[in-house]
Length: 225
Image 1 (tube, helix red, strand yellow):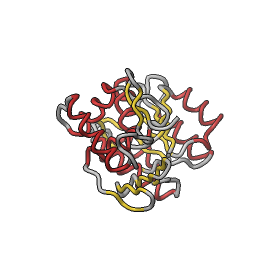
Image 2: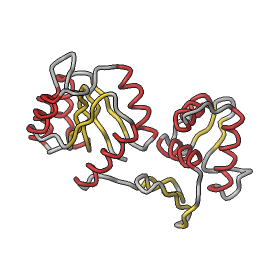
Image 3: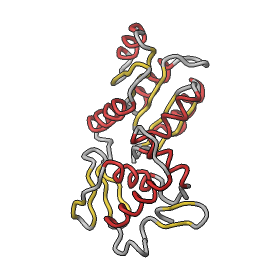
């Protein structure tokens, strides 16, 4: 799982982008200023695989962070810029940034760019695994005991959300919110029950006694210990 450092001081962007990228299988650490980002890079730069970096920060700016990232472990950097801010784009690229995306951006496009850059740097781990399941997050394929199984788009996203949050109890409300975001339309409680049932039928040895997606009574569901 790729570890992304998000440097952004807009709390709503941090919240929404973190949740979205976690659903896509990334591990996110977020800080809101230049000083915090520089301190984190000095202390543990090798832990990160890529930086998403806002140019304009309430405390400092993204340019010095980009310079530090490139001078230490040559971390890939994607700048988040205001639409039409050509100066920031040129400056960032001159400092060695690998790509930029203008706000407001389309999350799917950002994920595609992240995957492309991680592949270029040889940092991407495209396979996520749990017991006898493996998910290729680039090809969007799922294998059980080495054999590919076919999932609908919502079943795939539901599985990816579980496998990205191993050991965490996920409430029905949280799962509904995740599916709603993916489907782009309202998903009700009954629909969630149907999709969990369908997913279990495809991945569990015994869907009536599930061992992969477990029910935590009164709380929700959990994959992993």
